[in-house]
Length: 283
Image (cartoon, rainbow, N blue to C red; front, side):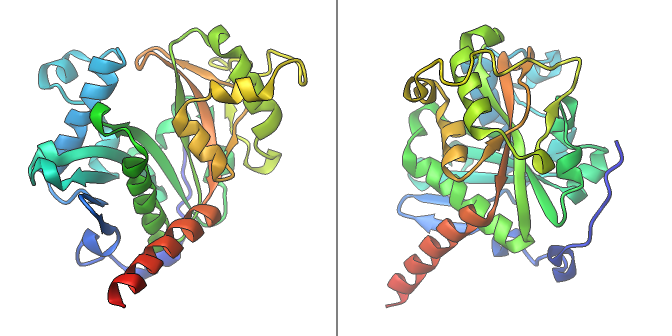
């Protein structure tokens, strides 16, 4: 897949002296920033392995199993967003949350975006302005709380603000590889949160799983929403949409849906919150 590289305000800025200039927020015992060393990236990959392969029963390659790390070619070109619990120390053990951030320039180095293996993402590639693919969202079991998730989102908001990101997208998962178990939430997402045609990605034909199994109005929408995973609920609260069709991912033991979020609401909410915190501290 050819990816047309669009000029953006971020490219005009040139590379920062340090990626600390892009994202760095400290709130109480937590800090969110981009990984700066190979050791920090390794710690993020170790956290991903523990969650995806040990906890969620994904299927690692022999090399991944030997190293006890989740990794692929995208890790070499993306930015890794980290949340650190400073009470756990300054080493790898302090990293409790991570997200993988892939912009156009990073995808170009690999030749595609990660989600292109599951969806026709032409609407994202052709979208005017900078776009950002989110992936590998991961939080340690004993840190899965609102505070950690909010720190990740504050980091994403600052990153999006710096690079003038217009839209974010990526695959989000339901547990298991039997889509019939998710007929209720899939139908709800299709009927109530389907992306408008100009930005609607569609599952690749050979991987397409129909989402609108139940007829609109034939189910309790509140019960359906209750069965939507928390991360996807978070995207929806920010005005997110889903693409057309689900995809079974046997490697990760999940069934995926495509998520699209325009960044306006994200950046406004979290940048304003962050700026209020700074003004309050200065006062």
